[in-house]
Image 1 (cartoon, rainbow, N blue to C red):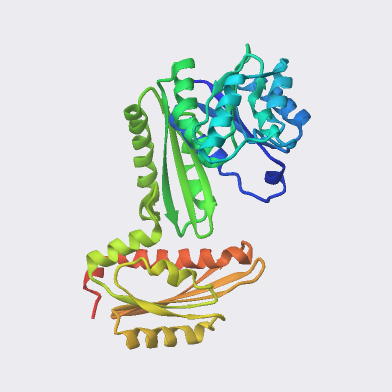
Image 2 (image 1 turned 135 degrees about the vertical axis):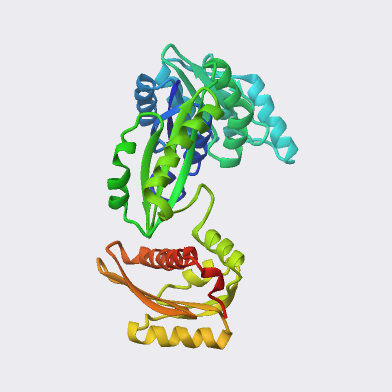
Length: 390
């Protein structure tokens, strides 16, 4: 399988003024096409540094994709940088200039002289005509590999990648294989504990298994390379079955499934109504519970409620709304010492749980919300949960 690198170009990216969404889009499309992506680099609007990054990437990868820097202004240096990187001059392409003029005419405008810069591309490059924008893209083929330069505007880049770049890559590299991924979602179990349970699987070479921690949940990514989607899916299924065997109900879903979506389906299936009281969580819990079946609404307090008061106030909330269950969550956030108290009121039992989180306070509300939702999910899994309504 060929390998690729992405180079995103723009000083605004380095300054944090905009977020790079292009790399994520390209990475997913390369993965689906069976192309290995090993590195992503961001470079400012400097022709020398861009050229150096491209030369280095060509020594490592078969495919180098750049985004950005193809506009008409003096700080759009990609065309010159790519030409310098591969050792050729820029050449004026009358057909491109004609395309640019036509595009402006569609907008009822006339191109300025600086737009003419966009009709210069590296000598011998293949033109990628851009029907959704004014910046032409191009492909440069070298003995080391190919450089494909795309606009930085996401909608233009995505259109050109789908309709021009991907078919070109499939032809040039005779692509038949695929890379398929599946993500399992866990909650209530630390990343280190999961690692202990599946460390041997994380050492596999194909499929590969990796962990990604979030506040209150950990994702397990399984990625397989194969000649067909069916073969890759079969490889993933075997590893997934083993992970599920080891982790059991710690896994709450996969891919696009969410914790609140899983809880909603369980609530609906069991016919349980519930309410909630949150304190110190900035509305995060009630916002997510708004998408859960059986939720009768709740109450939000800006400041945390001491644990000795939380159960009583949660009980009152339950009675006022005549709900079957009630969930109370109070977060005391502090650097390195976040504490969360969760109360669950049910007809046959009341329980109070205390959780600790050592991450930054700004992430604590999401962590507390996930801990509360997971406790709700775990209790809904218990035998007889369907009968625990008023």
